[in-house]
Image (cartoon, rainbow, N blue to C red; front, side, top):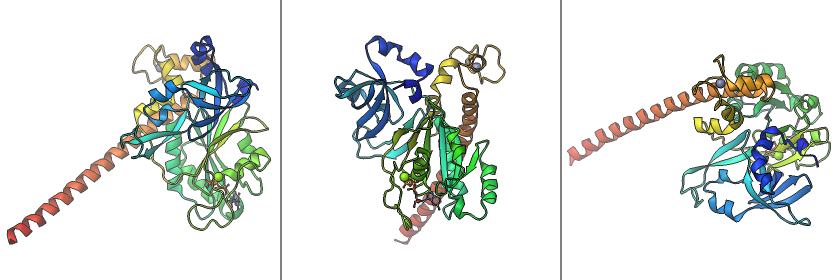
Length: 364
Ligand SMILES: Nc1nc2c(ncn2[C@@H]2O[C@H](COP(=O)(O)OP(=O)(O)OP(=O)(O)O)[C@@H](O)[C@H]2O)c(=O)[nH]1
Ligand SMILES: [Mg+2]
Ligand SMILES: [Zn+2]
């Protein structure tokens, strides 16, 4: 197997040198089930587990490998188990907040769960059926901008929508500059537009609510029935054959695709800290900028723009970084004001309660 086809590139190569010196080999996580992994390596696919040391040192779920991660493993002997010793820095990563009170590591705090790592393009899938919902698309978009991956909006089930042009126009108004592709996985119309993003070595992930047709799209792109699809008329809640696992799958025509389970609830991680984590390539370069607070716009001695010039960094990476910085600023401002609102509401409630309480005690 050729690692470049699995997305291996100079970024990971550079971070791997210390591990190759120690005799490890690179591997990419293609699936995970309760911390039992499956990895792709140059010499084939193997089951894998994290090393005892890694298990001991991990203090949150985000310290464990996720689907799409590049890791350093020992060479598995005769088809045996590969042991994962380290995770390479992530070029992009989606996470969601999990209220996992029972998890001993979190101590009841909401925890970050990495859903997929090192994704180049996110196909943000919505259905052009009754479920069509602009606000939901907006929330997913924010999640994607936060991840460091590039969003592509996919409006599926165009076959059942009479006025898809109208829907596309509505989405356009909220999409920043994300491309929008109306398709039908059922009739296979418009799929070539998605294949364009699946160049060799590129990773795309299907993201969106349950029932929008992510697994159907995956099957259509693969050309065989790989994923189980929900049975028709999934009335309320989850349909049968809803996807429960994430898996990284090579597409015959090039690229890799990750199907994800539909998310019920979107809880966004939007903090500057997270933003930095998603763009380690840019942050690494920025250390060499002349000014510490360089915005990589027109400042002299900007190492990030220099890297774009030499081709070391994709111009589109810098573009999504800029967009994300704006998005996060916007979102934080919005969260701040809603926190203010809740705080005011709480105090109003307390004041009211106190008035009533004093009335009651006066009566006594
Ligand atoms: N009419 C129409 N139906 C579609 C299309 N694509 C998918 N469906 C149907 O939508 C239902 C849900 O499809 P899935 O592919 O299982 O949806 P999913 O997004 O993978 O759902 P989860 O795995 O639960 O997240 C199935 O009954 C599909 O047959 C389409 O383009 N047109
Ligand atoms: Mg599915
Ligand atoms: Zn700069």
